[in-house]
Image (cartoon, rainbow, N blue to C red; front, side, top):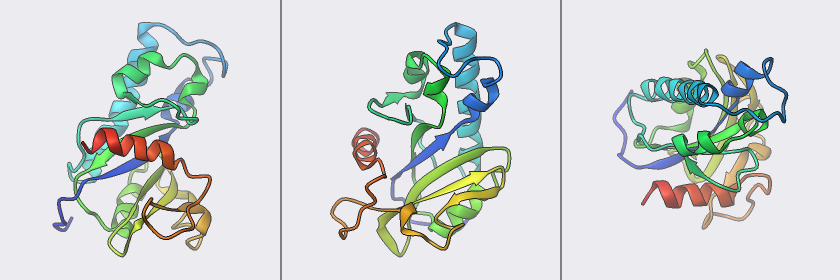
Length: 186
């Protein structure tokens, strides 16, 4: 990996590793309590984060935020796992992490594709050309799912950051993203 500017940016990762692991053991809305489940859930998420950190050359900060897909509340990872009550909470839950290097989006896309043990979606800044854009791409065990790189750069997978040109994707969780940025980039 080349040397890039030490610029911090927030990535959103939508994962379903916990959901997929336990979907045969629990009903979707069944309360899943107990220390064993929390420990297993946390271990799965930390394993994913560790693989991601290795893939990007260690350029991730340790603090991770988590929210449900509906994402009204952001929690630090260990606190959030304690608050999640049903398997539904883990269905495409969102992780917010800080990337500490400005890695071009095409290179980051390739690094994510190489994470062939996981299925996830990632939303990240479009470096270096259009830093006012966030792009979303789905990855499914080393292949594209849906997203910016797999679908001819469709606008549905592009969100404009605040203070950028008009045209923000209304489906993108910009409010939650900005809240995560405020917490993580202090």
